[in-house]
Image 1 (cartoon, helix red, strand yellow):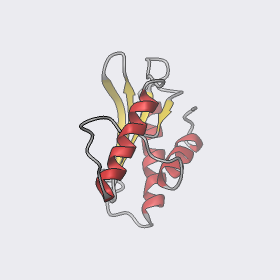
Image 2: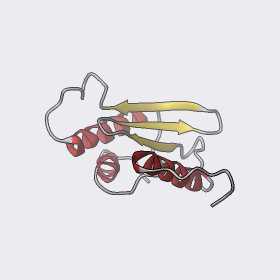
Image 3: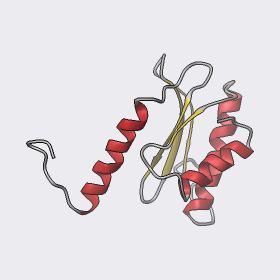
Image 4: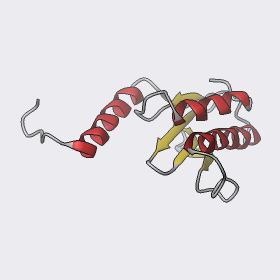
Length: 127
């Protein structure tokens, strides 16, 4: 441990670990105009996906479980993540994006993250 590093417990430790992994992943992943970055942000209740062009710093498309078309939908959180993946892929295609770089945001590629990515692939986005 580095000096001055506070030892965290419980949920704070998990969030710090996710943040460390996200920083490590972002060292090698960049979104360009040709292949923007598909970022997934996950909380206990919701999931948000954004397609970002890092060179310009603009969000090209986004979708979340807070959207009116998905909010209050039936199914578990994985089913809602599938809906978000399909919706963000549809909006990205409308914005002219064909291929993206997937940024899982430090989360494990399983469960809701994998469901969102699979739904985006099925909707036509290339990873």
